[in-house]
Structures are given as structure tokens and as C-alpha cells.
Image (cartoon, rainbow, N blue to C red):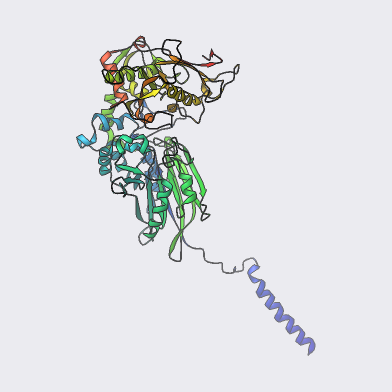
Amino acid sequence: MTSSSGASRRQVLAVAAAAATAPLLAGAPAEAKPKQPKTWDLTVLGTSDTHGNVYNWDYYKDAEFDDSKHNDVGVAKLATLVNQIRAERKGRATLVLDAGDTIQGTPLATYYAKQEPITSTGETHPMANAMNVLKYDAVTLGNHEFNYGLPLLATWIEQLGFPALAANAINAKTGKPAFLPYVIKEVRLGGHGAPKLRVGILGLTNPGVAIWDKANVEGRLVFADMVATAAKWVPEMRRRGADVVIISAHGGDSGTSSYGPELPNENPTALIAEQVPGIDAILFGHAHNEVPEKFVTNLKTGKAVLTSEPSKWGQRLTRMDFTLTREKGCWKVVDSSATTLNTNTVVEDPAVLAAVRGQHAKTVEYVNRVVAQSSVELSAAESRYKDTPILDFINHVQTEVVTAALAGGAYAGLPVLSIAAPFSRTAVFPQGDVRIRDVAGLYVYDNTLEAVVLTGAEVKAYLEYSAKYFVTVPVGAPVNPETISDPAVPDYNYDVFSGVDYDIDISKPVGQRITRLVLAGTDTPVAADAQFVVAVNNYRRSGGGNFPGIVKTQVYNAQQEIRQLLIDWAQAKGVIDPADFFVPNWKLVREGVPVF
């Protein structure tokens, strides 16, 4: 009995053990896992700094756009990529945003701001025509949106089939936002019956507008700090039901500014991501860099914020992808990623081309008009490091205009100096016919001409600041024109003076490089207390580039566009001959020995 009872007990234990290990045996049903939460996805496409590019066209060369890396440009190329992704994601949520600098930058954009302004004709701006075909969900205002004044900007915004955002542009009189701060877009995450998601989109523009377009915005708009503005509006958007918050910001991510501390930060994207909780992603622009994907950790929540910048001119499209789930009735982003797509992989969208074809053709015809004959070929290729006739052409025209305007007045007795920067390394006036596009290719910005009074000491300080453009090259070391400049200083922030003679010693430290500064055509040193009228563009005079001493009251400001003054001078003369304006007055040296 005892033996039989023990066997029976062992049998029961064996059965229990077998039952306990059954799930581990091959083919046995596994223990039930926790149910995985269902996920949905959202895609956000982003463009920025399209700068008036619709066609893949170089108006200055009158040819299809191409560069050394074979990039393509234009909204028509962007549209093809966008439409491909929309088709691939049919029935799922896809939004398209732009981070600003849209209506300035090509002769096409200039033509419909200056030659046939949309404010006068009532015609739809080519960038509105193109972007409406692409069907954006929202655009942020960039600093260049303010270049042509508030009436033209307002007209363009009215022509858009989607909202234009700028939360930190404040009406100076009312203290309230001058433009729409944000939108909340409700999208369906899939087909019929799928849940809905509310996506908040906040637009932030660049505070530098207050300097760069002071004449257009002073007394009308003030520009609040982008970080503080995000901190104000992101919680408000969350309160109003935004499940996901995306910022479209016209500001780079370096945390530095091209101007002094008197204005809020120019490039604060990384700071916004770090300091403001509740942001899922930031599409940004302004710096013209390609940043496919960069995560920034928010210092308060520890959350990784996705950021991306899609280069410039329509060369790249940012694609952000989000995976979402619902927890206790609330949406949560569980994964996000971004990349940039190259527009040189696709053809132009025919619907966008058709929408702008007439305006493109009219612009091409305009820029190909002959304005003068050049007696010789003039090139800007060496203007950064050699005194060239083509840069002297700009300074000569600016000097003539200011001298004539001040004749008979209080400043008529002062010498007139002029400042110009080598905006383009590729500009050429060919021998023979010079067309509008050749002049526009030399002076690519829509700057206006102003003049101020500087002392000799201020001229020297200005030149010392400008000379930081060059790297230090010791005596005896080889000089390579390709690497002679500091990559941190853009060409447009290196200025050349006419009207005084000077040497820049690139073997010396920054701040000690102007080793010779004399009155034009003499050996007489410029006295510290001497006075000069200095012709300068509005961007520089209002603080762009943070040059010393130049931000002061103008003695001349007729709101005349420098590019048009150059065209007018060429048309009036009929011949562009360096003998009429070329005066070699500066050179690079090392210990007094010319570098070139």
C-alpha cells in the first residue's frame, strides 16, 4: 500500500511538472504576451529658403540651374517629391510646411515686386501661384518676406491658399501678433473611421528683420525673442487641443547672431528645443544648411526633440516621420525620424511649371535686355582678394549718386567714400553686350543706397573689422586664393572701400592689419578726426554684419535700389569702360610686400 501510494504521488508531481514546462516545449502555445498598443503614423514634409525659385533655372546665366554638386532648385522639383510621397501615403496623414524666405532671391521674385509689383497690378505673385499648386498646409514668414514692404507682403499673404505664420512679429501699436501665430490642423490617421489627430503648427520669424528691414518695419512691428515666444504659445496650443506640436522656425540652430546683443538671438532653434517643453519637432531654415536629422534634448523633460533643415532654394525636401499611439485617451509620439531628399532625383512638376510659365517667360525676356557694351570682359572671380574693376564699378556708381545728391548742401565739402562687397564669385560682364542679368548677377541683393558720415578713426576700425575675413598667412608661407578667407565669414561680410588707399597685412593678427591708410592718390595718412561721407547699402548701415560705427543717422537715403542704379548708369553711358572708374586703391600685403 505504501509503495503504491508513493508511486501515485510521484505520478501527480510528474504531471504537474509537465504542465508547468509545457509552454517551453517546441510547438506548445506560448504564454499570452501583453497586447502591443496599436500605432499610427504621421509624415510632415518641409521646405525652406526657396527664395523665389520655381523653375530649375539660373536667370543670371540664362540656362538650367547647375552647380558643382549638380543640385537642382525650385518649387516645381519640390512638388514632384511631395506628390510622390502623398501618393505613396494615400489615405494616411501628410502635412507640408515651409520655414520662410520665399518671395525674394531671384529676378522672377524681384520682377513682381519692382518692375510689375503685385500691389499695383493685382496679379498673383509667382510664388503664390507655385505654392498653391503644391498645396502647402502653412508657411512661416522669413526675414526676406519684409524686403519689399508690408503692403506687398500683405498682398502676397492674401493670395495664398494656406495660412502664413509669424507668432513673434508684434504690432507695435496694439502689442498683439501682427500675423497668425499658429494653426491647429486636424488630420485623419488613415481611412474612413480612423482616429483624428490635432497637429499644432507654430511659426517663428527672425528678429533680425528689425535691423535688416528697419525702414519697412520701424514703428509698425517689433520682433520678440523666438525662445520666449515659443514658451508662450506652445502651452496655449496644447491647452487648445494640439496633440502634436511642430514649430516652423526661420532661424538657424547655432545660437549665434550676425548682429550684436541689442536684438534677440538670430539662430535659436537648438535653444528652443532645449528650453521649451511640449515640442515634438522643429522644421527650421535661414542658415541655408542641410541638416537631415538632429535630435536636441529638452532640459526640462529629457525628451528628444527632432529638428531638420532642408538646405536652400528647393534643393532638398525634409521628410519627418512620426509613430504615434494612444495612452489613456491621449496621443503620444513613440518614435520619430527625419531625412532630406534631393530634388535632383526627379523631374519638375508640370502643373507648377504651367502655373508660372507666363511669369517665368516675361522675367527671362526682361533679364536678357541689353543695357550697355563692355569694352573688355570684367570678372568678379578675384574680387575677394584683389582690387578689380567690376567691384570698382559698384563703388563708382554709388559715389556718383551720393555726390550728386549732396551737392550744394551741408556735406558737399566732404570727400565721398564708398563700400561694396563681393557678393558673387561668378559674376561676369562679357566683352560686348551686357544684359540686365549680368548686372543683376553682380549685385544679387535688393539693397538700397544710403550714406552716413564717418571719421578717419571709424573708417580704420571698419576696415580692421572687415579684414577679419582673411586667415592669417605668415610671411613666406604659400598663399592659396581658395583658402585665403575664414569659412566662418561669408563673402558678403567682407567690404572693400573706394576713396582712400590702404593695405591689408594678412600676416598680422586680426585688428592690426590695416598697415597703410592714406588719402586717395597721396601719401598723407588719414587723420583720426577727418570726416568722410560714406556710401553704403541699407543692410550694412542698419547693422547687418555687425560692422562698427556704421549704424548712425543717414545723410542720404532716397530709397533707390543699388542694382537699378547700376543698370541706369550703364544704360545712360552705353559703354562700360574700366578707364572711366577703375582706381586700384587697396592690396593684400605681408610686411609691406604685395601678396599678389
